[in-house]
Image 1 (tube, chains in turn orange, cyan):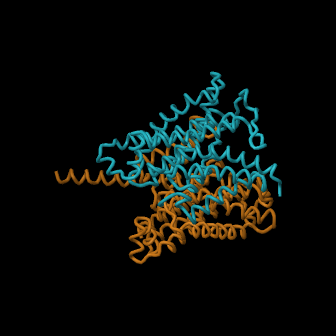
Image 2: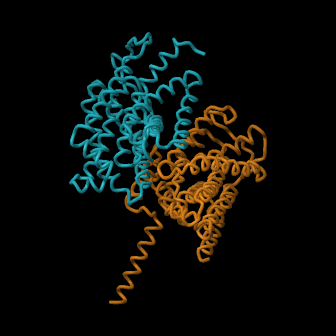
Image 3: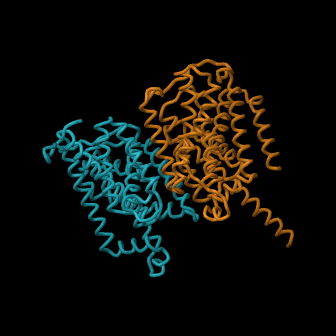
Length: 324
Length: 290
């Protein structure tokens, strides 16, 4: 319950941010940070709590993004409908990928490779078929208004994103405190032992990948409405997959606040490097890659693991002082 | 239905491309077979090799085939250092960590190259670049024929190293039984790094053979890395003959797919094979166990 209260407090504070932040560029920064936290939490549900490392979360993200864009541009449907359809189709893609891989017991590196390959297949397909605009990409016409899921002010986008992200974090909290979550973590820690105890790993993993796909897909819908432009590289390219996994790895996999911590840390680092070195091509990804290597080498449990290790050793030290 | 006059050259072309794929995949399968890690940085390292060959040619006028004396040893050293210094230290008891570290290395290498070499696509200008050879009535570019022969020779050399030398015996022992190998006095970290170095040296050879008929840009590794994974999975993780066979098969599939369905969908065929094999027969055609 204490964790839920803290979560409520953090999100209440996040809700009020636009009242204090007036500058549009700073609002964009906080939007991109929260968006990274959403991508990261989506990945964390499957990768952190479930131990299934996906290298292809762009498959879900891109599906959500393309759904809302294509429905609007080709069929003239309202993007609020696209929001629902995008989430649903992303869940469908997740179910398909989950069914083909988990059915045959693919784990670890094999699962990572298959998810990557699925994202690549979708990227090539969206590059070929006409209704996605192929290689040229697809442009959503600018038409501000809440009814069109576009907002004249950045604050409107922020609150939309806030609501989706809250949903993802509540889901993660629920996973940490429910029977389903306990089963999922049991499968992560030792699949064979979990099965011996009567857990059905296939069903558990299926539910996890669908939840994960849902929030990645919704992140894609948000991205499409915010930037109003998509192409195959943006939607299904490796950048989204990498950001999705990097955020929770930096912040702490399988923890509730890890993705938020990771998103803030990564964006702080990339803002600072942009200030110091300037906006050079590829440089932010160089930094991300370096952070990934350093985190895995020296802090495999992420920032929150680092924090809890430090506080624990500090506590032990003060206790030691008291005994002495 | 296109007639044989188109299909035969297409198949032969596919075989020459496939031999190079096989060479890239041989390094990957060697590393997997011994260290049981999937090296995500494989494509990025191939790209580095290609740039090395390119700059040796442009700056010092060294022919790509002469660069065979320089680039593979250099790549070997790089691979040894990477395994010893970074990758080998990353596992903390979980294979996923190694996967993540090699992914991180790939991102760093690729984007650093983008920064240093710019995104321009470059080619080398060699006098034999446009010469052709007639084989079975089909005209093939000379560099591709050389690459085909070179890839097969390299595979044979690798097989000799693995089966006839002390290093090869140590590598095979380590692949089978790590504890046992340690007990008979094999320096595990050293042999691991030697295997990784050998795998990366294969990329150096591939780079020298590839560049006369290919190009280089910072993203060039991308195309190869999934293809190489497909080959390794198709042939069976850790199987040498499987990698060779898988490479040739994929080369031909790509050439024929491109002929019948157009280039981008021909690539799709490779990924579909990849997913199908991973899902239905993850042990591959010649592999033993997952």
